[in-house]
Length: 159
Image (tube, rainbow, N blue to C red):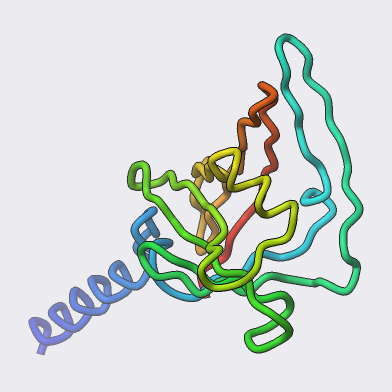
C-alpha cells in the first residue's frame, strides 16, 4: 500500500512537472497567438548616427488585439479576431531559433505604400528579449535605407 501511494505521488509530481515546463522559442514558431494593443505599441525608438529619439504614432483605437496564425515560414494576422476584416499575409525568414525577419506577402494581397516601404527596407527583424509563462517579449526593429533604425518593444501570447 505504501509503495502504491509513493508511486502515485511520484507519478503525480512528474505529471505536474511536465505541465509546468517552460516555453522556448520553438513554441512560438507554429500555432495561434495574440498581441494585445497597448499604449507601449504606439512608442517607437529611432536611432540615427549618435541620436536617439522616441516617437509616438497614432493607433487605431478600434483595435484591441491582433490574432496571429503562424506556420514555420508564414503567418496571417487578423485585427480583433479571425475572420474580422482583411488579414495581413506575412512571410517569416528564420534567422536563428529566436529571431526572424518579417516581410509582407505581395502575392496574397496588394500592399499599401507603408508595407511596400517595409519590404523595400528588408523587413522587420523580431528578436526575443525574454519568455515568461506563455509570453514572448520581443523587440521589432527595421534598418532603413536612410540609415535609421526604428524599433518597438512588444509581447506575443501563446494561446
